Length: 262
Image 1 (cartoon, helix red, strand yellow):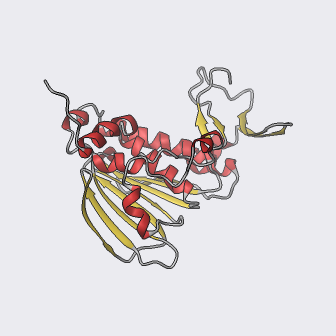
Image 2 (image 1 turned 45 degrees about the horizontal axis):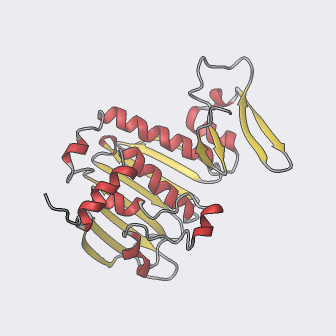
């Protein structure tokens, strides 16, 4: 059997497996793009666990028209320019893989409006451009992803039930909202609104919006300033405890981490 190079579309589908495992992966990547675009309001709506439809809309700075084709090319990014930039990354994403990976395994539609430019609508199916045209759009960006893994049915078979996939999306939404209490997040599944955070900057307000006032009443504020770092958040009162570590969430520079030490 002779060796031959793969075509770009197949390369993107293979690479997408490293970034996009399930609907929750798409929601996480798109929200992180919205955060990097300085959005203060982010809304997420899904249908059928996100397999049928995911919509992420923000009021961020939008995308310049000339940047849109590049945004769907692998490893094209505005976040880094040179090797030295890898040592002081300040954005949520930087590899330039999210949008091309998502577009290669779904049908994607993007509406965006930047500054004084006209709004733009882009349609991509399985990584192939269908259309790109001027279209009225609200300031910011809205990405709609439908028919996930329609062109890679083997991967679609590995998805869990609609309820389970929806629960994964909800979990991602909660964790991202708790990381950024200064941003207003809303989450709806099958047109049912599960929560909407105020974006006040107060983490306890976010906990109230997601889990309710009774749950939030069990927490006290934690705020400590050291020589090299600032520690802040919420910690439960001694009488309010769990038998496992499932609900212990740790963030570094607003990014969720897992740390056995902590």
